[in-house]
Image (cartoon, rainbow, N blue to C red):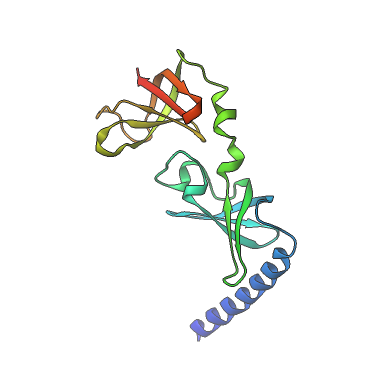
Length: 176
């Protein structure tokens, strides 16, 4: 008997969410900035509630340009964040969101850094074949340093900015 009640509740809730979705898609468009609240976090992304109950998916790749292992590295339950409407699928009643566009462009973020200075970053992904380590300087700004096996993912490291190449949007770093 409990399963029937649960399923009945789920059907009513789904119908209510579809009604909210249908009302919302007439008011918003792709590329629009809206406010949301993080409601659930999964390994592949976060579910963000926008506009009074409609929930969209913020995929992990759309949280930051810096590669992360889990969305919890940037987001927490209940956190209020601005998001961009990335895609609206009316047939499947799904909305995809993006956050990284709101963290500034490469050109905007690089203005805080200069060649020859030492700054602190966070070690992220190791490049294929151990060719280097991606170091996050800001959520939307990543540079490459030489590979060192003693550096672990998520570790804070001091790096020297050897070269900034604006035309390629690259930053060459040396781990101190």
